[in-house]
Picture 1 (cartoon, rainbow, N blue to C red):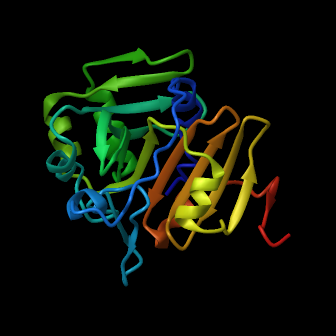
Picture 2: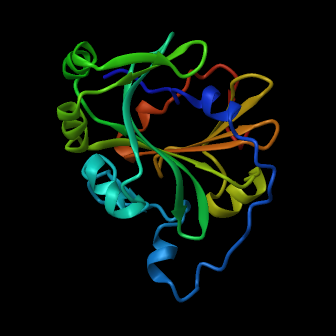
Picture 3: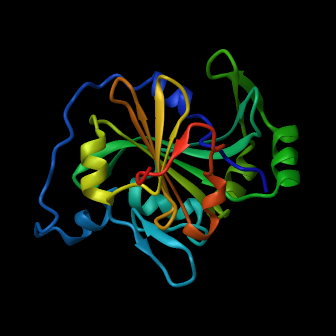
Length: 227
């Protein structure tokens, strides 16, 4: 299985333009369901899976997210020029508890089935200069809804800095500096990778902890917090 290596993060960061401050909220409020949907509420399960936003990674289906985030979703294959294509469900705006943002669900689907979907696709178009969006046939959209969720990507509308990340998740097991613009804080035990942009942009990716290698990055520039 190919590593996802945070595919699409550069594209996502390019469209984040809301320079607002992350609002710290009281997790002890009366709305228990809203609290359970917050992006820092990660439940690690005994089988090595995890639950976040009310969805169990590797078990919940793409279609199950409809009950959480509503029907307004764009399901398509996204094919960056230099990375393997992914089957993604994109929610432009969701309420994750008291926090708003964008959600992308990456489906767990075999490469040959993904290729067949692409061959049957209605059309291909550019999302930007190097990434293609493949619009699926209705029957393949339905098949996508029946696929398990492999990765959840959350892009908060508000600015989320390292201080808040450490308050919510603790010290990262590893930090990976990709370039001058982007640093990753990694939490393998939670199945979480947080990418922080120099200008305050944030991308949070969740995977079942037992499959953290899907989010693993090359170790150049990596350091342990203890170092």
